[in-house]
Picture 1 (cartoon, helix red, strand yellow):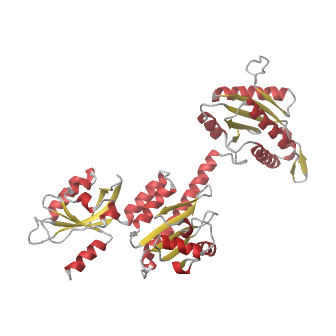
Picture 2 (picture 1 turned 120 degrees about the vertical axis):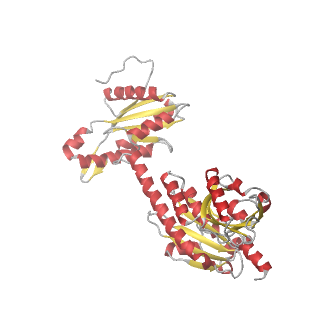
Picture 3 (picture 1 turned 120 degrees about the horizontal axis):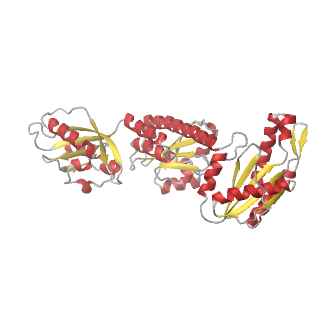
Length: 438
């Protein structure tokens, strides 16, 4: 083979090739080290190869290195963690062989290949089980595909639990990776659930301009099936050279598509479980434990607490059954939620008892909120053929100490109940006529 061609093949390879001398110093490294580990070749030349290996693997690497130097045929690849320029660790399968089998004590050639799928899947599972952010879990998958920044750009776009579109991968204009809701092949592919391959020249003027600005030529748009009832995720692979076949990435894109589908379904299930653990099953409001945690976390600054007890709710269950009572409670919860401010925490803290935490809120604003709650509850609630009139007794307390607020709001609510209900009372620390709960 032409030596110049051989050098070009090494330098264009996605794997990293390096040579080390008899003392383990790096004497050559291929340019792909920049994509793989974040270093410029000049950053590593002359340094000991062992300096980049996880310290827990150095002894094993030394033993393998010494044994390999006596043979001209490479052993099977050994897996090590190597230090990335950003301080993280990346797994590689490393194969070594003497450069000259007649002088095995001289230069030694190492071939570094990103770790096999098993290591990636281990990392993926560790991230999922640890509750890592979805972007943290997806990013290594996109990176592992072997995208070369001089040949391909890849992005994954998905909708998170809050309805926000997010992405991982290479930086591509939002309009040409599915991140922006614009007319074009991305919307068509998502709506139809089918893949599209499009040339930049075939796009409308605006999208084509974004492609030209990024020196992009052909896009492969791959929708990811959605199990979550939300917008599908989408994978986009762009080529950066004219005539380069985008389908060359097909095998990994298929794997990536399947893994993205599984990861998003997993996270959605986890989010539903976490939501169920923190919320009341009937009303979907914060449950008692969650409300207490929110109140305890609201440290510093003035805040107000509304304690709401429905008046005479027990006959609803006794006369019409618990299923009807549940529907009334759901309606009450929705009405309370509609009357408070955005960001206020509404919880169901008992059978027919509710509470509202209002941060950065004094007693006067809290009283206004309580008046709105009473107003919305005064509207009839219709369940089937029966109309219910629901009222409430509301106790209001304002201050900075969470524990004091609970006692004060409870005492004020008892006063509201004693006054006949359908009213709100603001706690007065100076008042002495406060009933006790027996």
